[in-house]
Length: 115
Ligand SMILES: Cc1cc2nc3c(=O)[nH]c(=O)nc-3n(C[C@H](O)[C@H](O)[C@H](O)COP(=O)(O)OP(=O)(O)OC[C@H]3O[C@@H](n4cnc5c(N)ncnc54)[C@H](O)[C@@H]3O)c2cc1C
Image (cartoon, rainbow, N blue to C red; front, side, top):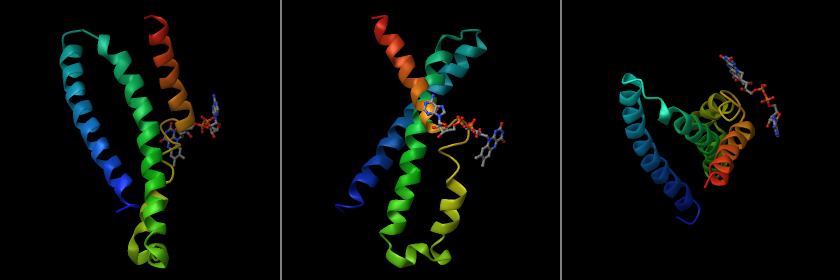
């Protein structure tokens, strides 16, 4: 539990935020249908930041779980090898995570300056 507990907590957090995000996306889609585009900006930056955060957590979490299965985690029977190689480009494609995080952070800074 000491090892896996934080990862399980992260998964719950991702699920809660993901559900909220899905609802926000539905609201945004409805607004766009009515030619209202105000939410696009914040949703773009919000999801960019989450892509960076979540894909990094998943990438590192997968490796962590695999290593904690001992040698068995490195056997192709575990399917970790396949999953890890398929997932490994996610922190880079659709925008490198460093760049995506910077983009979101500069948006947050800009918003704070306006307060
Ligand atoms: C498997 C795979 C499939 C892909 N499929 C497609 C596809 O179908 N269509 C498509 O158009 N593209 C595709 N790509 C390209 C992908 O979208 C880009 O590789 C990705 O957006 C990263 O851009 P880049 O390669 O220019 O790297 P960069 O963004 O230039 O990053 C290179 C390095 O520089 C660092 N870096 C960059 N800017 C900064 C900064 N300001 N501060 C600090 N560090 C910085 C990054 O952290 C990274 O380490 C694919 C890539 C991969 C790996």
